[in-house]
Length: 293
Image (cartoon, rainbow, N blue to C red; front, side):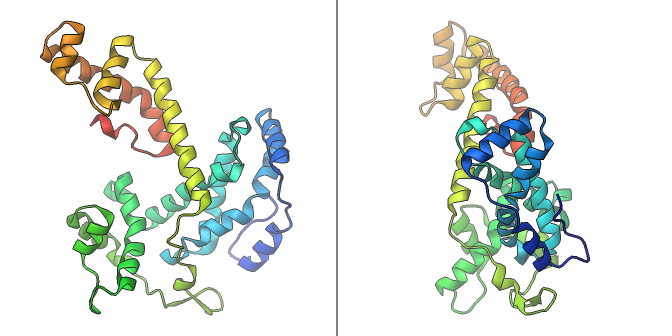
């Protein structure tokens, strides 16, 4: 792409360059996506460049973590390109609605890497807590329920429905990188971190992206289930996916064998399903198989 960020480019120059790329209609987007899937690299280039403005908008939401804006945008651009590679124009949604998940995933991965959390074995739940912690603290402080004192871990834990010990552990990890939201930033120093704090409200794009991610997960789970034999599939559906799960005794009675044999078959069915879902976990970064414990 012609517009790029280097150490010598200013952000304003970059924004000026990417604003020159025209936005696409849904029909144009679908046609280009189909051409790209057939090997037309120029079509892929247009899909990327037409959405660079949105990438910058998402990247700005993470400015308060103290990282260079140019680095955040570059990571976000990688996420956009990944989304273009995987985008299916026949799903009936806009590219950016699908891409926003990939964009956020690459930005958040970069933020976590620079906070050295990945080396500590961060799980998806910990990643969510990392990005929710500062926002939740600000919310509680704005409510004025702290009598001027700093919000404690117990209050945050209740708000996020997690253990207070998990909040304290995350605060310790983040302790070396605490930032003042009033500290000046930018080349001219005329802005503060507070100017770039993300809105607390959930955007429409986020909601669409979450639904898209859930649809991808459900599709892959159904594919994985189809690879199990009928008895294994029945066990998973009745013991894992049902709202009123069947007991092991009921399962054994259904198939005509003992409760212990039912337990052994359940373990085997779960292991096989976990193996089928391994690719899904790698692609969407989720813990879709965590229910199988």
